[in-house]
Image (tube, rainbow, N blue to C red; front, side, top):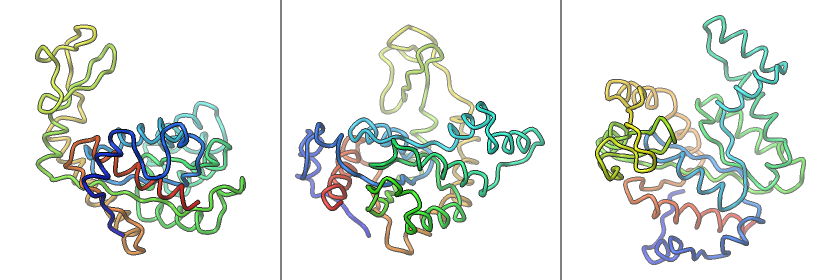
Length: 257
């Protein structure tokens, strides 16, 4: 499924208008599962946070889940810790089990946004099977199929977004020298700290991250696309326009729930 908004619809939604509800109503609707796909720098994190703010559903990060399980010394956390201390990688089965545990919690009953999951085709198949079987619907509200939104961004645009990122080590504010520069070059607008370039945003590291995405994560999109479940968004557009289209899709989903 490939869906796009007409320009007028996008404009209305960006201004706070949507087809079904305003932001106050949105906090009480059933959205269902939301899966955001796209290469590093496509804007998944920004859009996930906006969805969380509007609809009041949680953002589920596998990195956060892993750290929480290890910190609480749960059975799953202890298994993961032993693997990591041995220099290994936490496998799909263990990651899936952590996600399953998280998604059955009560704050997920109206929906959730998955951040960094599924990361492999194996994880995508597992999640799809669980959603179809209704194993996460014990609260009786998640009757909708997931929205799988893939944000496509031109390769050169991704490079500019990632290599241009700067962050403040004090307040954590993020800038981009190409698109959202600080008022004074390399200096934080808020506290005057010298901005830094994270190791992940160096060009040689970025090239490897994009290569890894193509090899490992892109098959996740192919898996859902083969079932007609992927909504393709033009991620080269301004951030607010992408947000408007996502809100439109989620409001439509809520209207059908």
